[in-house]
Image (cartoon, rainbow, N blue to C red; front, side, top):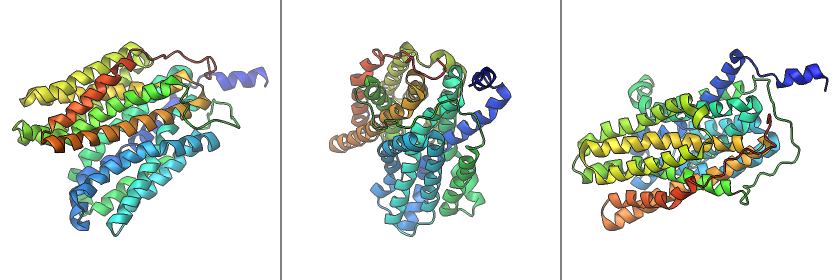
Length: 402
């Protein structure tokens, strides 16, 4: 390659050219969660029309979370074969087919199938985004890129849960079917816009491994720590009503859930500011993991508003921990290996985030005390906490741009 062409290929783009990439990353991040978390506010309306049982109503949310684990491997395979940008666009189309399809399904079986398809699409998006970062951004922008799309994801959690009932549904004649379609279709525009950026810094690789590298200790370690963050957040979210009822303050549930989920938005905003200082630092990860566990313990042991404040603190810190963990793969392995490592960690993390709260629910049903479900999640967290203190986050020499 001539010197002039080489310099043009390696010169960092001006900030103005990074803005469209940042917007695309953020919008893609939003659709990591809106399709999943739009289900809880719509669940009563869906249940009434289709006569769903309590278990099936809960499955509208828990089934996609399970698919987040199962679908990581198809995402990794697609990244290895067609690249992260094509995989992300394909995954968003699959997500739209499943998400919008839920609003068109006539019965319970087809509704659950559509929910599973939607979950597969979202799960394929997850490893695609970190794999795309080294191809679109310079090495010193990777941490910020992770923070941007994770900010979109956590904002998506709040938007999906907070805007659906008071804003969008009344505009659509209170139709849960039209609401699902309206939330889903704009993602097709985002998928098409992914092909606008021409910049692709990574060299094409013909043969790329896609199965998780279980010989890399980070695959299991990061995954188990993702499970800590996910099981605490999803678990306490699921059992908040039962916990407050046990404490005799069930009337505080709406406020508790509002602040609990809003804390995730603040977590993402904090990380937009602090990502370049905190990403890749083992001490910060260990500290946040410890604080999240203390917050969960406080939510169980304390009462009144102190319990809610403690739960909200846990949500805030768990959100920050999630961003730090997801940001690790692009920093420590080559662009070709990023999708593989990310997919392996998501496979482990979301399997744990699904299984631990579910097992906790079984224990709580057996004992009749909702606190025991949370205690099981805290016990899991304490068992894997030492992993945070021993993470090896050294950057590989073959990382692009290094």
